[in-house]
Image (cartoon, rainbow, N blue to C red; front, side):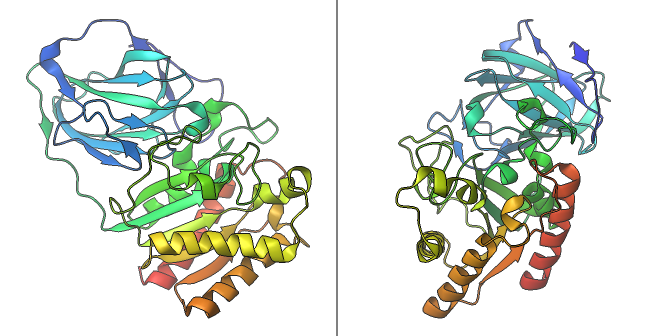
Length: 363
């Protein structure tokens, strides 16, 4: 395994893994459909031996024996990054910088020859393409053990680049676009889910809005997809995984784009109705979930912004019309930082959201 250290190390001790060109014995490959591999998120299992991960924050867990471990991944474009955690060492991820095509990535060696845990977590999002997981490579004679317990609580997040974690590991003076500095594991949603010992699903895409996006589709077109790589055919089966809490963080892109992309420009009533309509869509899919409508912490929540008010009015109308008390608002204050939130901002927002959900859900 060839390991290199990054030039700067902001929040983790980081190890970047390069792929191995060495052959692997068929005898010690554990296929992706093994019963002891545990998956969480919107994952395409149309080929059970080649599940495809495209959404940010999708993750795989397993327990294994032995002293080494490799992963076999087939990346669509060579743009995705993954965190790999061994033995729940959350502060020291091994980072896979995927290369295009099927490669074997050696992620652990010289471990103590006993039982270990594995978490594989997709840092990047649908814009970066999908990755097919082909299986694990263990030591000769090593095995997969029973999978870890699943948390009983479940939270799903619907959002844009903020929820995806765009630029969150970039230095504050730098731009936000380097995919290696996009880390959904340290976005506010993933942090909140871990704070609350909850399973986590992230349905987000940088640039997306409810009325206007940086591209030609919006969240109402996109929210129900199985695959995150643009608009495509297969739909997600909402009966497969039911959240206890749904968090929405949308309207940031609308605040920037409705005047540029929509003609006529929607008035206040149109904006409130658009948010209201999306609430109806999600409530129909999740009739029992507690819905938290957030916004921020970019400039859509700056002082004097009209967008939090649009959300508040939509939620109040929805509560009254549907006699629905399991829906509320919580806004993340604009700190004056004009780029995408960095990890410190995500952590602060996660603490606020964690406390709010604890109070509302009795967790």
